[in-house]
Amino acid sequence: MNHLLAKSVMRRLISGGGSIRSASPAPALTIFRAVTESATARRESLVYVRGGGVELMKRMMSSEAVKVTEEKKEVKEEKKKSESNVVVSSYWGVARPRITKEDGTEWPWNCFMPWETYQADLSIDLGKHHVPKTFLDKVAYKTVKLLRIPTDVFFQRRYGCRAMMLETVAAVPGMVGGMLLHLRSLRKFQQSGGWIKALLEEAENERMHLMTMVELVKPKWYERFLVLTVQGVFFNAFFVLYMMSPKVAHRVVGYLEEEAIHSYTEYLKDIESGAIENVPAPAIAIDYWRLPKDAKLKDVITVIRADEAHHRDVNHFASDIHFQGKELRDAPAPLGYH
Ligand SMILES: [Fe+2]
Ligand SMILES: [Fe+2]
Image 1 (cartoon, rainbow, N blue to C red):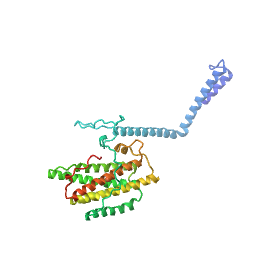
Image 2 (cartoon, rainbow, N blue to C red):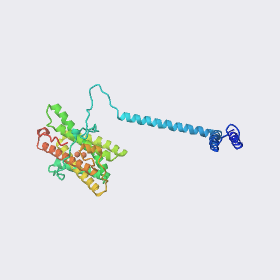
Image 3 (tube, rainbow, N blue to C red):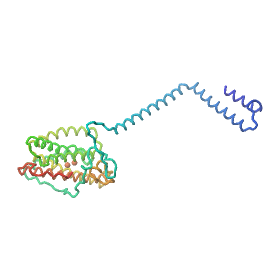
Image 4 (cartoon, protein in one colour):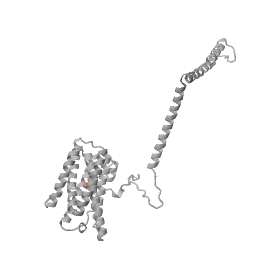
């Protein structure tokens, strides 16, 4: 039909008669183009409906489906965003105060506050070693050296992974010791001399080492399983040991910390040699240890190693107090490092 219409328009234009007659050829050409273009378009659409109606329907449906999925995605993303920004309303008057950094930006961490951050003491003597003299010291030392063998075999020089896994263990003794001293303080109506706080601070500091390492190394499923097993065994074993002999328990931790210093020194050697990439420090580490904004992995490992040296000294000191036949509360706890 459109083809016939175009033909009749052509005929009329050529004959020069009819209602579409024009004084000049240009408007006539425009009308001709308009008519043929619309006719072609309609023809194409007709052909499409006749020959591929199903195709067209499919295409329309699939574009609708894409639209719906995109809309769903957007709704999901919006929901996620709003969930992450959600503020749990409380009528108990419990609210986190608005805390800002020195540059005026909001403090991003809920797990630690600006007043809990510190600068590690990098001048600490890393090579200090408690020479085992008594029988119990030797038992503690040999136990730690024995424990190192399977660790070396399993991790070899994968120091990132090794540190992450060992920090899951390192954060246990402080918590066990702190908890038992807390209960003792309640039972005996006695002050602890600050040792409850000192040991709990150590546990928290070790946990922050783990929170930092986990930003750098993602644990695999079997490593998570290993942590579960090791924690189950180590927590109970250390709990029993601390109940039986706190002096041996602290000595064991002192030697474990000496091993941790050694491991982190090896880690730093691999960073310096280029075997491990000196990646930028995680944001959590920069804020926790008050590191410069452009700090690198090497800086983070250096401050963690200094912390381990501090733990070494605290635990050997605690063990020495017991060896002198005294209780921890008789010597004021070395608070204020963390
Ligand atoms: Fe640690
Ligand atoms: Fe430590």
